[in-house]
Amino acid sequence: MASVFSKIIRGEIPCYKLAEDDHNIAFLDIFPIVKGHALVVPKIEVDKLFDLPEECYVSLMIFAKKVAKGIEKTIPCNRVSIHVIGLEVPHAHIHLIPINSMSDCNFANPKLKLSKSEFDEIADNIRKNILL
Image (cartoon, rainbow, N blue to C red; front, side, top):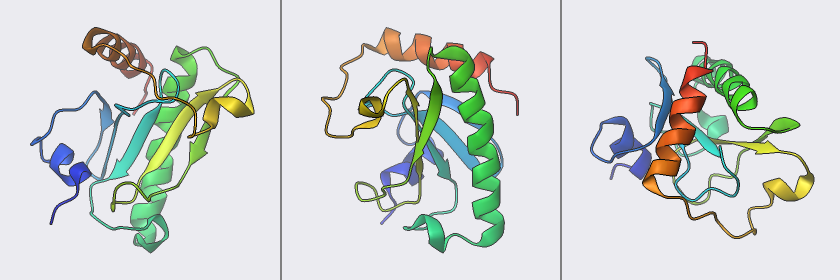
């Protein structure tokens, strides 16, 4: 059965897309812990990040770096943190989270409730700052 991320990649489920190339896609997390919280996902459906073929893993990390730089230029933060948890969706992915303190990347924090227009604005602004 296809993961929710595979359905997003195929366009069956909408997302707030930030960037895409032949092998990867980045979009805003719809349950963000901070504004600008993004997911970076390889298009190949593999459950665990470290089970990706090496060339896919390297491609994903290079792509994630470009997305993180775009987030950093857009969202006021000290840095963009990277997290690999992978328990909620059985498809390898990376969380990129703009942070100013350690508490900003606590997944136990309440999720933000943003409107569609807020998500659209954040995605539009980040997209402008991603150099692929």
